[in-house]
Length: 171
Image (cartoon, rainbow, N blue to C red; front, side, top):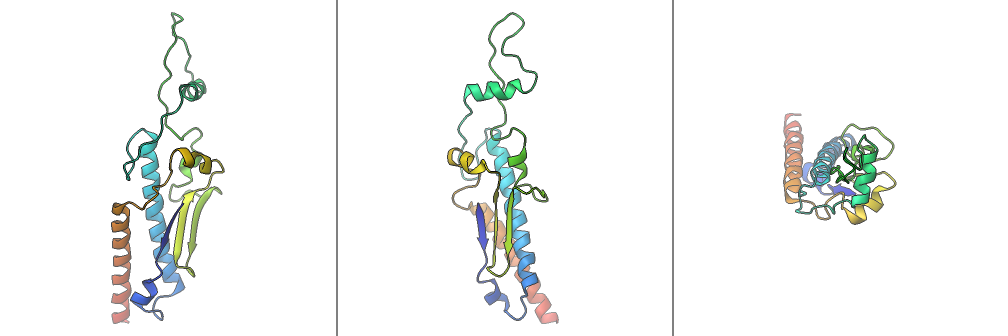
């Protein structure tokens, strides 16, 4: 899971001007961004690429690749009876439900997306029951928040604060 906490935001903008609705709006924007980045990182890692934090996922066992390939029309032997190597499949994707759990806009019950305006935080994550087991071997979300994500979220917050201050001086 990944949590963004914006505790000091009310102090920066002004408690009387910064409503709970405003807090919910900015947290929703940050959460949508975090989910989008987590989803893109998952796609990169699942296709054997390097994640935003420099990690790579462990390859699937050959037997797992064979089982996944058999779900399609792959045959373990060619026409001459020779054993074939199974094709490489996308790691972490079988039905696509775990991957979809972090797609912004996905409304399945297995999505972790919690905006808590009172606590000033938003939490996103993979909510499939088996995600926690998968995560132990192949981390779904970087352990440390990548610097690129931090910079983008700071930009989102900065734009939000500027809009709030502009409304405050205009109103």
